[in-house]
Length: 618
Image (cartoon, rainbow, N blue to C red; front, side):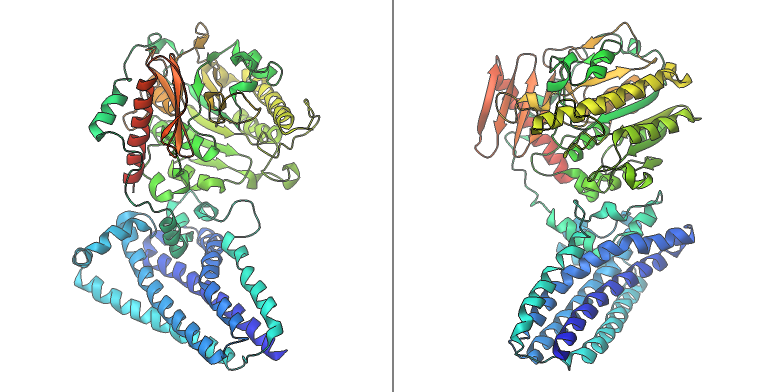
């Protein structure tokens, strides 16, 4: 029994040793940048440790996996051999990580981000790295590296010596338990039992980016970016880069529906963007879809400016948000929102709106850590963020967050006391996400997945209808543009044709409010989410130059198109037809209409050009 207890305690102490190391690493980082730390409140400094603990535990669990397995095998192998392996493994890891600790602190000043794979290209020229530091920095850095390594090696040696002498072998019955104990490490690795594994967003808690960066575990961040590393080649390259760009640019012209000054009634309206979770045009009656699922949206479509050929660029929220707010195409496989080292360089609509004098806000009733959304939004420079943590748990459904009626009431309440004009507010709904848990009656029943889907959207439609009724009574309504847009397409309800056909990606976009010219009722031009930021900034006389992939939605050329991507494939549609292509089989899935070969070239050019941009972002 004593041997069992000693093995158990050895594992516990080993895991906690690494947690303590990473707590020290955060303290070291804060002291290294003491001038920035002094700008933080004491409570914020404390929260960097509290919020960072999950990533600390996650990487501590990674490092503990091999020793835990070895301790398990010490039941059948001489423990002296096992413990010596663990000792030298730990010494090497301490020395290596302590070096990266110093590099991380030194690079933060210049790069403004915690350690990631941006470091790797410089390893090919170590002499340039050394030459960029002063002799004092180099000497003091080496001294600190040795000192920190030795201190933690000594700490570990004491823990190791205290417990290792009490471990014996040939206790076969212990094997299953210690195998289970090793398997349990998956819990801290994932950061708990939640749906979404722990990521950088879990530690972002402050409007101060330095505080958020301090909370990040530098080794977790480095390892995470390593797993997302590409080999630097573009698998979607079909043309010379200049040729691809020329093919794309041929479709960008200035044949506008009307003088763009006539679209809005004011040059600086308030803007409210409502992103409706998972709403496809297939169930929107005003777009030719099912007539009874969204009665409020159907009615409102007659009052505002309806875009009848508008498309999502992806099929997930973490693809849709960068498309809408950064004008950035999602990649066939990668998701840029999950890669903070790349998203920090994206153009951001909220930042551009702030430059125009807008106060920016983002509201979501769930966990902003999903898909690294929190990290992306804070990089976007949004000044106010409201998420699920600000809603009572009794108002949550069992999985995702606050019910839409509760969430939109909070959104409306805040708007009713809005004092600063102009404002740019974004609300992302969630109740129409699986598992489609709603309040009240399931209008279409819940016997089938599609009917649950319809019922959930009927519920959210009633919530949106109530919000617009509220908005019309507010003083600010007459000077406001309200945009209702789906965040992405959806496969439900089932549609005819290929799974990735345009039917899945066609979504509604409706402009309402006193700031919209009531004489213009429909825009039939083909466009997509990446065009939204470009067009809005164009209407507001803002700086749209960074939104390279966007085009003006009010362009009436027959060549105007909507492009979307899916896993290793793309679809592209214009007035004359569509083209659906699969990169795995290297052939089209389906095409229709005249000049489909032009759509083939355009779609491949967009995929190539956008993926190359993705690769080059640091």
